[in-house]
Amino acid sequence: MDSSMEVLSLFPRYLLKGALAPEALRALQQLAHQVLTDPQSAPDASVKLAGQLSLQRELGPQYPPVVDLCADVLLPACERWIRHVVDQQPPEARGPWAEGRYRLQLIDIWLNVQRAGDYNPTHTHGGTFSGVVFLEVPPQINAERFDGQLCFYGPEDWHIQSFRTGMAHYVVPVPGEFYVFPAWQPHSVAPFRGDGDRLSLAFNVVALPQQPAARPGPVVEGNISLSTARRKPGGFG
Image (cartoon, rainbow, N blue to C red; front, top):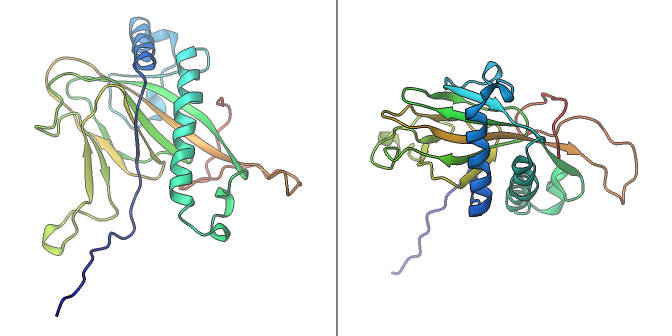
């Protein structure tokens, strides 16, 4: 008797992966080296971050490449993630993620300069979305070993004997590539050996409630978040 079988993958986690246009990458690389030449021109971000890195500097709307990156890439990427995930649900289940009921705002973006021995321990972010944009990577960081790789973690420890596989996903950083993920997603960056700077941008985005035009009424202030209700002032759209 013939039979039909199918293995289903349940409860997925989603990462959005993309690549910058070459001219956008070059502009951000130039900005990174501008900050490296004069680190005091940008505020120190390390005091509020988990990373044990050589240098972490806040960037902002005074830098045109950052504004362009936000408007042309990062916010559209977050929107793409939302629509891919939420539109799989029936309309009545989409809640605050129905189109027109929220707006996205970048609240933090900073330059990470990682050198030999530096690392980023396992951590999460506040807000709604986080992500990374890789700018420059020393050649010894590659798929041959874990050095300098970004790792995303699943909800349980990896344990092959009980089939808990796929609980860690490693990403080899490639200049120009970027990733967007929910802020609650645990991740880390391994240290690496050898010379060179591993340059990347990291960012946080929040979703703010926005009353649909068809349903007038007061806007409830606050942060729609997949992980935390932490509110942060400032930022730029």
